[in-house]
Image (cartoon, rainbow over the protein chains, first blue to last red):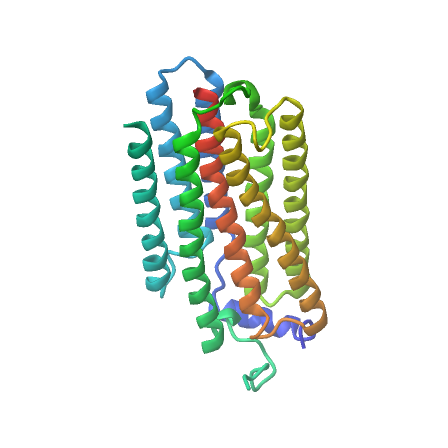
Length: 106
Length: 205
């Protein structure tokens, strides 16, 4: 049954307005641009280290947000529990990173 | 027993969410990803705390080569896009294109793994071994764990391709494809932090 009803399923797809690839291409181009900015900031070299760090972390945060929202469908309906699950993980991660940094360096 | 086919023999729109079993699978997988976030978070925090303790080993800025890291990043980003296309093909009930996109996804995953193995052997030649320093241990643990996730994903998606060939796309197999795509994106998301925190910040100093 998997391939036999090809044309029928395309009709069904049209009725349901299956999402096009456009927003995923946009997410890809955004990810690409953010990656390029991060690598360029390092490859250019001799910018203030602190400033480079801020650029790097900023680009990573934005890219992760873009990928979670579009590619992992987080912005779609009915993603309350996934958001809670991941948010809990992120809270633990930030606590760990901050704790480990302060504990070891100070 | 769950119905493998809907009454009229057609797959519903978004077959991964058509059954309670499928919806629960997706939800459970997100909770698993929350735990994975914590796992990688602890490895990242260990790396961040130890990355300056290089002992007698090479400095990260001498060790890392940006072109190779950039190539690995591009490979993984492209393979993430390929699995997006696979899920879109699944939503259109186009089984053959879906299998094609999945195949490209795992081929790119294998290319990424090959590059990582080449990279690690190079590092070992330059005296950056697992037991060289706290930096090298935490580096290999973090990046190696990510590589192991890629290897598992390649194996998993490869087996799913075989299962689809055997059983076709049903409301039982569709959630597996959807969940494996989310897993693959998650691996790419972790890599975003790895190339930022490990490689680029290591290069800066």
